[in-house]
Amino acid sequence: KAGVTQTPRYLIKTRGQQVTLSCSPISGHRSVSWYQQTPGQGLQFLFEYFSETQRNKGNFPGRFSGRQFSNSRSEMNVSTLELGDSALYLCASSSAVGVHHNEQFFGPGTRLTVL
Amino acid sequence: SQQGEEDPQALSIQEGENATMNCSYKTSINNLQWYRQNSGRGLVHLILIRSNEREKHSGRLRVTLDTSKKSSSLLITASRAADTASYFCATEVGGSNYKLTFGKGTLLTVNP
Figure 1 (spheres, rainbow over the protein chains, first blue to last red):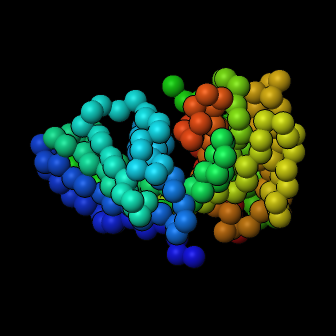
Figure 2 (cartoon, helix red, strand yellow):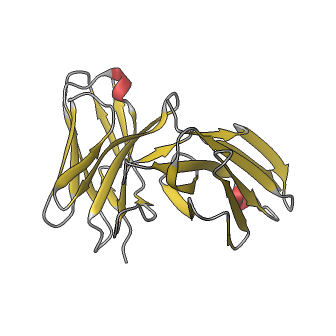
């Protein structure tokens, strides 16, 4: 099976712009989670989608949003970019069968730089 | 605040030696997972241990979980230079299904 893919791999934006990142999960996985990784804050959970519904959300401002399509592909959007949004954005998919998490499979990430 | 905290923050050993990393957490969990990350790339899942398990093995990896102390340890035996990476513990907290909370990681350097 192909792994989790994320596009683009690198992105440079300026403050005030918006950005959309894309994630294609492993075939058959219906759960997609997004994380932000920075040197200062580490890995922080953004949100999780399952069957096109947001099931869980982290403590991020409303500028961060996401969605999931019927084929389980997911996008996240960040509006009005700030310098502090510079980070590695990681997407992970999981089969998430049952109540509790199974292992998550991570993509290579999108490195976002905000100038 | 982070649910999981790894200790030490950095560890440097010689090839062939064992490496032990610890993780402490604050609230009750459904499961605890360990991940490896090479140089700012995506994370690779290593092992998952559920709250009712005490020890799990996978190849050269051994994970223990002590729910009374709210702690876990990851042991890598006979380390190799290729094990050089950051290691993270992640917890799934009861009542917050599908949300993993990561610690800040242990940077392991294995010198050839």
